[in-house]
Length: 60
Image (cartoon, rainbow, N blue to C red; front, side, top):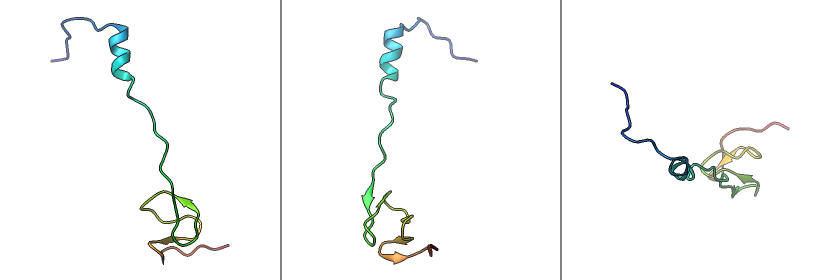
């Protein structure tokens, strides 16, 4: 069986429902080791550290 609505929804009602589908800006925090902006709970791309410990070695 498929969905069969009893009454047609107006464009205004449809668009009100879709109004909350918006993107939000990603949250950025400063790295505790080098001070670069990074996403929280992830390895820093600038210095390769997480929680003040070097996880990935970065080659220059």
